[in-house]
Length: 231
Length: 278
Image (tube, rainbow over all chains, first blue to last red; front, side):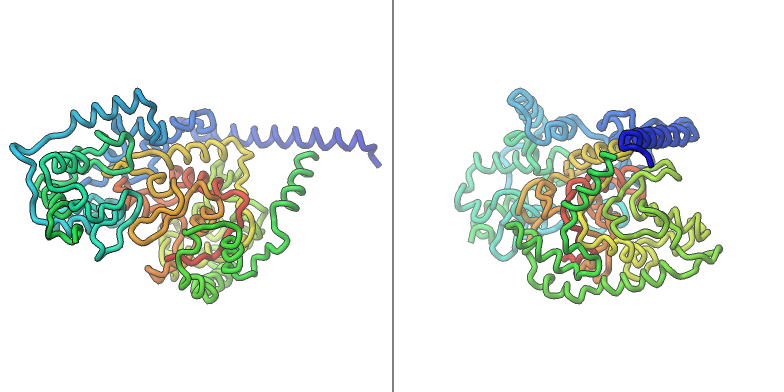
């Protein structure tokens, strides 16, 4: 029978041996896959980029509705990169830069900012169609992409909206239908980072997801006195 | 020795005395509901009632027969398949996945491990429907996954993080989870980073609340809206579709990285297997 000390020693060396074995096995396996980077030696950020863009993990060659491919969707622009890095909590300097860039991105219609058809706007606000890829890609030739507004906002009392964003119920009654309000709403839909840097809200105008006409219709749904949002 | 002692300690403390895979998963969920105030966990009384007779429990039974049946070109069962606890040892195996497997040199999730065993042990070609079809209650995959995972019902999630690759994949998965991209600038965080928020009428689970997150990641689950038992990979694909990002390839390294992170975020909480979801 081994003394307690010897026993401990034996366990320790056995543990050491198994560590060596594990590491040995690990190196050997990796040596077999020549050319493949060593995941364990990469930073989490570098490995994430590699996994997304270089490892065959996504169908990157699928054509995207806006042109280009799914790969373009997965490559981050400056805003996406920065907001991801700070997990949507930019410091004052970063926030200032984001706001400035967002303001510069906004293109306005000529003349006054128009309101369109609130009925069409209601359908667009309710709809979740457009830009989906993967196993069930949206065919934009069958219908126009919609706004996804109800996913995150309460609007008309007739329909249950989400609450990831603030409630917009009665928005036109509260804010009025002035040029200043229309301008603010237009900018919020176009690129909300102009007011809320690293907001969750998508850039429906700046990313070209909604046409000018669609934005005008959705704005009418929000602001027109006859819209169910304002009843 | 110390490691072993810690493991024994962890098992003693970590596993509730009542952890019993044969318990109805709804009881695991009810205990969670009693432990935390959660709009997500309590959003459907109807699902709670239906869960007593979860159709996914039938999928588990079908999976049991399939697991032990002699199948494939080599006409053998899956009883020698090692899911990390040793050949054929299923109890608690899923709660510790994804994990590193020495024989492949990779971190694998359940689905990829199952594919590995079906192709190597049973000799199925990779394009055989048994291997290739992943979705729907009637597929071999959903049956087998349901049976294997049910052997971790009520057990605390405990992904190992011993091997450097396990840690690397988990950490990359965290970056991917928070990585905004695609048409709508979304990341997983957009929907799963705050407590009690809704997309339309559905209350979303928060990754920062482990008692909610364990239900969120408890797949396979019977999805009432689909009338099918669904997998982790199916959930992930749906999320990427909604986020307007590229479609993930099932079993690919990026998907396993995300699964590694999301399992780690439910660490210590009991798995609900099989679950029922809206």
